[in-house]
Image 1 (cartoon, rainbow, N blue to C red):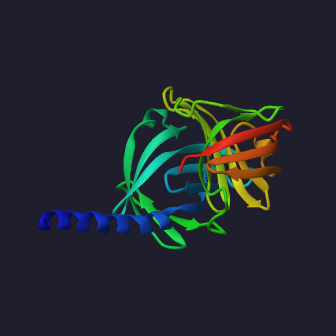
Image 2 (spheres, rainbow, N blue to C red; image 1 turned 30 degrees about the vertical axis):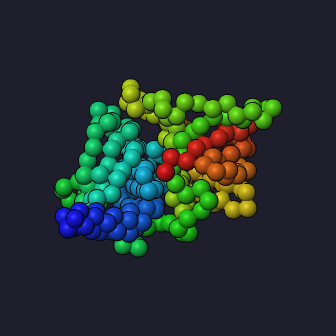
Length: 241
């Protein structure tokens, strides 16, 4: 009985330690730096179960690379799993353990080598859409929802922190990457506005603002308006975390 109580106490203690760390890690983080071709922005988005890390040119939003996937917390670490990686597709499906230290304003993270120092960029901390979402289907002209199989390897994920977003289209089986875009957003009074800061398929879209209607019903996000090309869309996203 004493052994059972001791084990229960240890498990409970680990849960209490992991939860505050997980809350501190979540959010949007940024590094401003320089490369041979000019200023570069690195953006790290972390929700409670998903993450993305992207680099783009600060001036024109020219996309450089992105990687990300899922993660779980451990004492002083992020255990990350790659679902996409444009620089190293062979890394898809592999795991890494990052050492992390987080405060309200800064995050230091590294995979065993030198740690990078990130500055928090989230204001405010949460919106109704904060979290990770998977593209779940579309609504037709009659209002019917045509859902897709979320277990298939071809996915479109959208990660939203309190003020930043990124969507990524990829295939975990073939390790293909199909496109991404992101920036900052607002979600208030049923209106969702994206301000595009990078876009892998067409950097001429950078600087555009897109306004959509949105509604959250249980674990579904209903999203309607016009795409960056001006085409009408009515999508359904399902919460991933």
